[in-house]
Every structure is written in C-alpha cells, then in structure tokens.
Length: 467
Image (tube, rainbow, N blue to C red):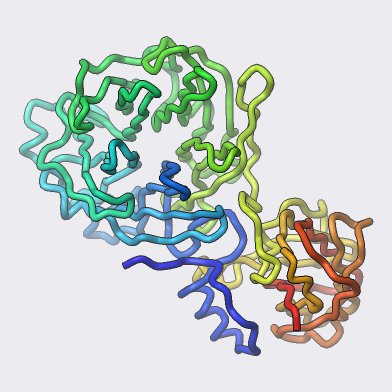
C-alpha cells in the first residue's frame, strides 16, 4: 500500500497537543533532514526515474533476542520512496523481504545496503544477504563477508512488486552492490569484500559478463565498503565510506574508465562528530542540481545501528573536484510557507541560547522542538516558499512557561525586514498563537527568529496563513 509520509496539507484548527502529535506521526513530518520521518532508513541509493527521484534504502529495525544478532544491524525488508519536489516523500511500502528470497538465510536479518536501477523499461533491485547453507558450500564462513551473496529482483515498476531470482549472482561474494550503466549502455556491478570488486553485467542484468577484477587503487588500512560510482563530464567518480581513523568518512577517487585505474582525490564528508560509526552514500543529479545522500542516527542518538536517510546539495570546483560537504539539518528542497515549518531543522543558529530537543524522548519520530533560553538567541531557516498567496497571519505553537518578552520574526537576517512579533507572556503552556503580519509576503525567503526576553521559550512549529 502506498502511503504519503509527510507534508500533507491541513487546515489549522485548535487541536489538543495529543491529537496534533497523533496526526504528526501518522500522516506528517516536517523539515528536511532526516528525509524519512516515520521509520529508520539507511544506505540510500538515489535514482532519477522519469520526473521523480527515488530512494532505494535499507530498513533498520530493533532486533529482539530471537532475531539476527541483538544490538547489531537488523534488517528484514526494503522500502522505496519517491518525490517530485524533494520535500514531499511517498513511501511505496515494502518491496522485498528476506522471507521472499529463496537463497537467503531468512533468520539472519542481514539484507543490507541495496541498489536499484532501470534498464530498457525493467527495474532491477540488487541486494546482499547471508545465504542459507546450500549456497555457502565451498565458502569459508570464517572469512569476513564470504557468507554474503548478492542477488537481484526484477519489477515492471520502480515501486514493485519485485520478484527475486532463485539464485544469487554467481562469482559475487560480498556486500553493498552498486550498478552503473555507462553512456554506451554497458552495465557494471561493484561490491565490497575487504577490497572493491567490479565486473561487467550481461545484457539481462542478472549475471556477470566478465570476470570480477579487484579495484586495487584504494586504501589498504581501515575498513572500506559501500562503493558507489557516477559519471560527470567523462570522469568516473568512485565514492565510498572508509574508516581512516575512528568511524567512517566518505572519500572518493576518479578514473577515465569505469573499472579504473582510480586516483584518490579526497574526503567528501568527514567523520560524524557524534560517533555514528557507519555512513553510506549515493550521488545524483536532479533538475540541474547535484545531491549527496547519506545516513546518520539522528532519531537514535544512543544506538547507531538505527539510522536515517539524509541529503544535502553537492558542488564541484572548476577542476571537477567535489567540494567537501558539511551535513545540515535543513537539507534540501523548498518548504511551503503554509506548511508547519519546523525551525529545529535550521540553516544557522546563535552560538549560545538556542538548542533543539526531542518533543518526546520515548518516541523520537515525533520530532524536535526549538528551545530559546537567552536574550538575543536566534535561529534561521532558509528557502521558504510563500508563492503568490500573500498570507496575512503567522501561527505558532509555543510553550513559554515562566518566560517574559517576545519572539521577533524577520526575513533573511537579524537586520532583515520585521514581519511580526509574538508576545510570549501568555504562552504558559503549549498552545497556538496568532500574529498579524505587518506586510504582504510573496516569493522565496529565508526566515529569521530571535528571542528578546528572559526565561525559556519552546517553539514546535510556525505557519503562514491567509485568513
């Protein structure tokens, strides 16, 4: 069943907090990163299909004592998601489960990072899993990764249903499949197992056309995995996670041929400052802009085996080298002014006096709130689309118990045009507050909110309406 997972339009009514939170979790999420806001997702492969962008992702769950390996990565199925505007994402539901794969060990919960791609009107989904005993014959399970095989499932639509092949791809042992189709139509499969491997795929996309080759021009020290290749201006970019120090950072190398030799170029994204041990990436061009997809454990800060898909814009310098990316909460896409804007997905903030906290730590998918506790503290949220509606009212969900002062809303920056203020003296519990805008607003603007006063102010969301 297809399900729209966030940014559904709603008219504003005075619901109780409980009702609002129920609506949020069942229908809506706000902001940008993480992109998928009602489940754990990881290892995103982003693909442009038609006029939409699709994400083929793995699905983290929390294993119990009878599932897989407790306190480790636990995955039993895959979902696919799509968007036409980078803001509204649709969950197309479960497209493949470990229980549907004839050759997979259905008790291993180890269907890890996948890839999906279109060729000649068919859709091919590549995925790793521990194989059952029959398919491990001749392999030494003591060798890290040797128990993993890579299979393929085929569909007539990117959202499935996918039908898995009865056997995994021969001569392919390892994890993290990636498929690249060159301009001449030749497809290549890449995977990792200690080293990176590559081979040509046959025309049917289900078996190798050439013998696997070791792509040897990559670091020998530290774990490396998750190869993802893309092409730009005749240059082939191989991106990959690598544990150079403590956790995985994303590096890349370039070549003039899909199978190399590759030349190391540098780091795209540094190690996570909050010790999420893994990362996994893909790169795609959508509507004339390049984007970088990855994952982090925002919804599970104390357990980094439950991760969430993120995305930020990617840029190149004049020599074709990738500029380093700093992860953001704001992410990608425009936010409609009449949606509930979650300022906790900020673009920038003051050094002191502003923080974000979970609304309910027992249910992180309810999201975060902005917390101001110092006079002059501020937050900026970029790329809000007011369109041509010219709203005249600002609505805000605020809690300001034992606080005095006001919230000041401006366009662009602290020196930008003042659009309205909200007196917080009466906001002694979570409630919606309304303020009249001082002038009409249209087009795309950055928003700037500053707290002038004393005490502690919490903001759940803001929204602009025409009443």
